[in-house]
Amino acid sequence: AVGPVTNLEIVNKNIAPDGFTRSTVLAGGTFPGPLIQAHKGDDFRINVINQLSDTSMDTSTSVHWHGIFQHRTNWADGASFVNQCPIPPNDSFLYSFTVPDQAGTFWYHSHLSAQYCDGLRGPLVIYDDDDPLADMYDVDDASTVIMLSDWYHKTSPQLYKAIPFTPDATLINGLGRYSGGPLSPLAVINVEYGKRYRFRLIGASCDPWFNFTMDGHNMTIIEADGIEVEPVVVDSLPIFVGQRYSVVVTADQPVDNYWIRAFPDNGPQTFDGGLNSAILRYAGAPTNDPTTEQGPYVLPFDEGALHPLSDAGAPGIAEPGKADVNINFVTGFGTVDEQFTMNGVTFVSPPLPVLLQILSGARHASQLLPNGSVYELPHNKVIEVSIPATELKPGGALGGPHPFHLHGHAFDVVRVAGSSTYNFVNPVRRDTVSTGLQANNDNVTIRFVTNNPGPWFFHCHIDWHLHDGFAVVMAEATSETAAEEHPPDYWANQCFST
Ligand code: C2O
Image 1 (tube, rainbow, N blue to C red):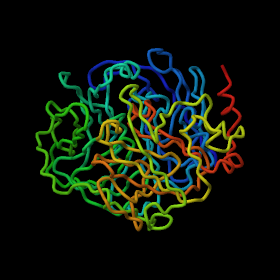
Image 2: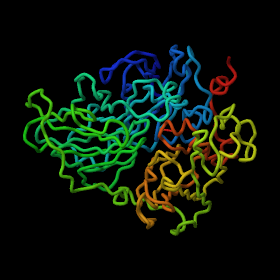
Image 3: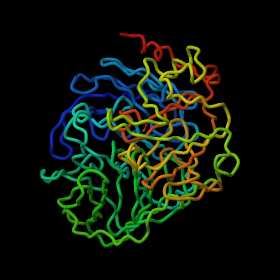
Image 4: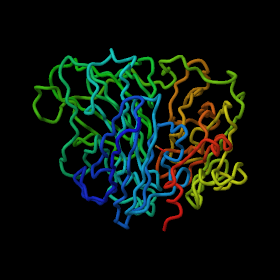
């Protein structure tokens, strides 16, 4: 069934989410953008209307639905110059796709240059009416999204010219404070004593990862990146850019206010004055700031301890380097031109989207632009990709740990950051993984099956790094793409309108 069309207007607006006013690019005029909610199996028809006019930032746009597989709708994946041409100002673009078999916590964001750092990011939740873990929580509603983001007082084009720079504030659900700023309102998560909540945490940052904690409360992880996991209890949780978790939290502490903390690895390094914080408020507690203390933390997060609820298991021969196709990336950073490289090549946007090139007859990496950044993958094969941890030696990929995201898939992380062993039996399956911060020769290894034809972006999700070319395109099953992918006429027309 074709669902109703939702309009999503992209606008410029002056807002002051941390008390400092700046011009922004927003979805629906708010930060974060409106929560898009659906139920498993629903169709999406989202009409993105570009009303941008502030020429101090990008005035074109495109929107990516992070984590949605887009089977046979690669054209609707939203990455500018990979899946579509950008939407010019005063124009609109209808994203139409189905999500037959995914549920959980996702998000959407601009996928043009580093535009989402100027604001265009929002939550997307797909409910599962037959959630196998539903008996673990009583309450799972729209108010329980907790979206973490960094925030800057300058626009992204200003920041490109000001390297190095750090975020001015952390925003939780679009509210926060900056060092030396006013006591701006903080986000409040309201709970009732005795109830159990599913909190949907979204790492919607441009750069930092956050160490997420809630004073006095443990968290039971039940979902990672849209895939339910066997429950694991933690009291601190690192959330890298692009990642999501659902955690179950029981409101079993005395009625009071408790600090929620999101400590960034880059940005203001203190909780003083309510920085990097939000408030967990029990019904009946006064409307004060909390006075709770952090820690002690005794239940640390271990990515290797996350296992999918379904008995997934990694595809292919259970030995490293023994997939059908094995790709070992070398990553780097040129200190002169400040561009990242993957296997020696910096990604630069091609003149026409990779999908349009394929639909126009190009089939092989040698024919596809950008030259050297497109990897042609055969259909229905097991692919293994190995990515080094941040290389600490000169010339290594500075600015890590780098969170890598693959469009169109979830992948099995057969070797997680910081581990020297492989798990092919029940590895965590997700769409964004941190490659960690170890010494040389460590790597993170993922596997996936090429069952989703189309060109898919694979990139560091630190948006500044993507802007600086830290990306490749996995051109999966190009002949099947040409045969099966049928974009609407307006999709190609957009590339040729003036
Ligand atoms: Cu969250 Cu390439 O995207």
